[in-house]
Image (tube, rainbow, N blue to C red; front, side):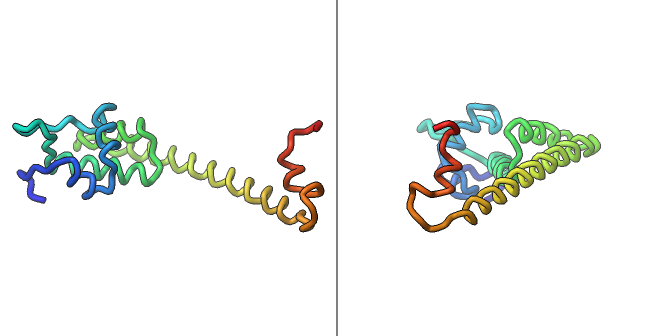
Length: 137
């Protein structure tokens, strides 16, 4: 898409793999600037919107929070700054990802243990149901 080309929200959505409702929501929360309107009052997006939305989508795909993305976008607009702040955000996010992986691995071990206790008998004797039931019942 050329730099001076404008396109509607459907084209932007398709180009970035983002739902139209999500694009409108990003506008409402201030992550994406509201586009100009055509004479027919349709949104007219440009290359800057496409670039910014692509950035947002990629950051979301990597699991960054909206607050982190907002900060990264603000930093990205200040090209002369050192990238230490970006590195800090990325490292903090990596630590969070590592914590989630550890939690998921613990969950997997617990589920594997429950499944391993299955005797393929009746539900009344099912160790999985027993483990899920509230204690004391």
